[in-house]
Length: 119
Image (cartoon, rainbow, N blue to C red; front, side, top):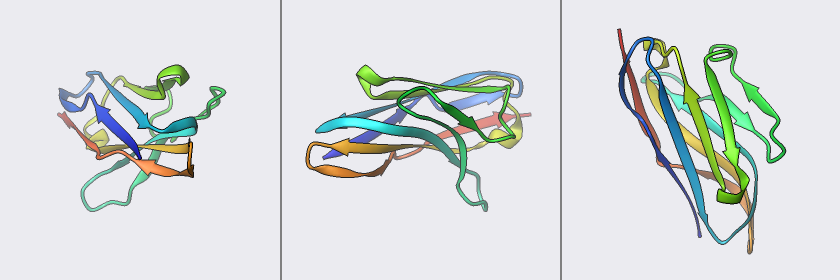
């Protein structure tokens, strides 16, 4: 069984910073792409940032220059450093991982962590 557990969300004022973490655990052989998605009320879930096991990154245009994704492959953990936060960044943030487990492979999601940016 594989689990992705997020932490680090919360309430912050506009212009502030937060750091999200997501750790994958279980019978994992390797995690390929790991990413962060977000879903605001009434909107579809969207990709925020993703990173390959080799460190290649991809960002949504709306967060470029403000957010930084990184990972620790030894810990199967991905991070999202969010700076210069805006009220429109308010959403539930979900971690996603493309997991190669000892018994097979699949995409897994975390439970989500709320990020609220006040103006």
